[in-house]
Length: 116
Image 1: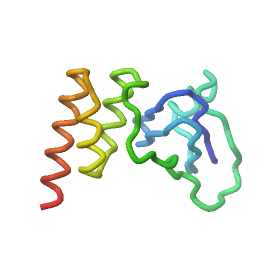
Image 2: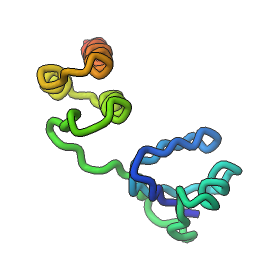
Image 3: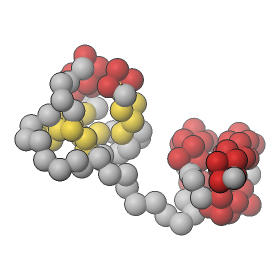
């Protein structure tokens, strides 16, 4: 079964081990109870049942995302996905919110630690 996130935000489905960004589709073997509940509540839709090529691709990322246009929670979630130390540095220079700056600093340390 192929499912699609139609929410405007990130959707986490713990019992299936999925984290779907808006508009992302993914193939699942058997729908879990949470997936069935999310389909019933309108957060997910069935995009098909024919197993095709894996379509779970993240959306294209900008060079430096504009965190100022996001809520603090969305900005922190975006920071958690960043891997490039240069992008993180550019965001640190532009960001003013303390909670987002803390997340950026932590992510910068993790990215620098993983590169060594």
